[in-house]
Length: 246
Image (tube, rainbow, N blue to C red; front, side, top):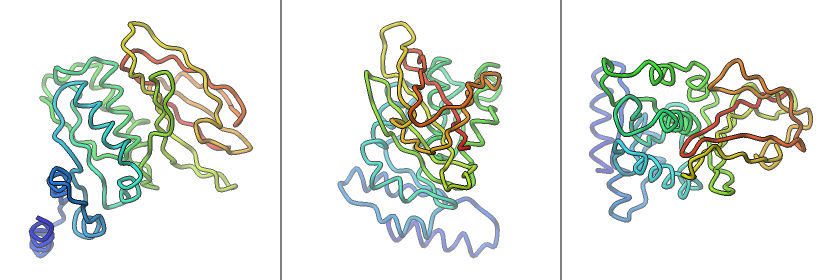
């Protein structure tokens, strides 16, 4: 596979037609206990499947998130413009995910700079799920020009924090960030949890202007690195914000 895929890519390029080339050999190597050659992947493929196939269920979604978080130190650095890690397809619009769980997958795929490839029946997608799939602010995070893949940076009381550096970059060199708060809780009610902005990994001394990426009307104001940021996350759901560096 590590030779066949590059050879097939060479033949594709010889056609002279623009194509996006997706490779699967890392997923098979992982199963066999082999370490993928990421330099070869970046040279020959536009995207590659890292791990298991996704199923239409929250359990499968969470397992894939766990895999990427557990292995992020070796996987994350290799994603970037023209060569992307692929956690598999978007399940939104099928049967297995609730509304909140659909928002969760879309947010985490955007944090991971993942290819947004849908696996659903477009004719059957409900209007509220269509709104998630067409959310321009979330898509802009996924397609941010820096192409930096995000990471899970913190977990507290079954609330995970995932963040990704994005544009704009302040004159001081501090990035803006997309930050997702993911609930692994199933206790039947929204969970209120505070963090300082600094705990989220955001240290710009001039602070950040914060906006809810799933509700454009919800502009939360300016927060400094020592400010307390409080969010309420639905069970197995997500809240998703853009922290714009000032």
